[in-house]
Length: 227
Figure 1 (cartoon, rainbow, N blue to C red):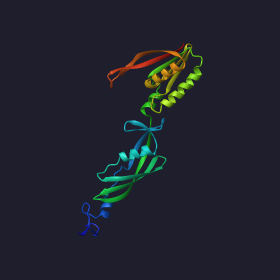
Figure 2 (cartoon, rainbow, N blue to C red):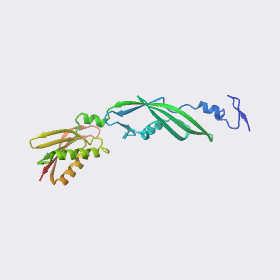
Figure 3 (cartoon, one colour):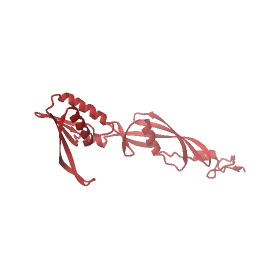
Figure 4 (tube, rainbow, N blue to C red):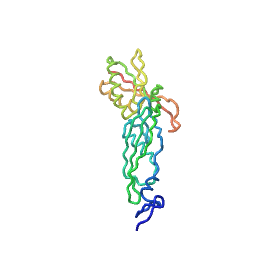
């Protein structure tokens, strides 16, 4: 049975919200905000999304934009096109939407504005934060080991944001190396003690109180002494 669209007068078999499909398509509003502010660390160039740090690329930008999508319509497909600007990105979002078994292809625009910040990990590292000290004692090949430590930490940093040297102090008895991550420092000293046949001694000291975990904060010292 043919009906008439009360808005444009066109004959149609299906009315969606009392208008024809063409008039309904014109009523579909953008399900995206005009601007998305995105905090990017100015040091490591990564972003925090869903509680994790991610490299800034089009895959994660797509996830960020789609997470802002707010609509009660059935979105079947989404294609995103990014154009880099001096402030961030202009984004064209093409959506295939289904309503009353009719498909609508709609293009919407949004802007991603990059806001440069320091992430928690980088802020700690630039503040000389450390969770462990590695002491090298009795080693003749100190400079070689320091390069080896840098290589080890650079590889570990892909999974551990605090895997970095935050300070080096050369003493008469050897070298003290501050490491941001306790977890990675433990792995590193096990590796070095096995490779160089060194004796490992571990001590700890209280360095404040963690209110979130309701327990004292500790910092560890790992002393590696060449046999």
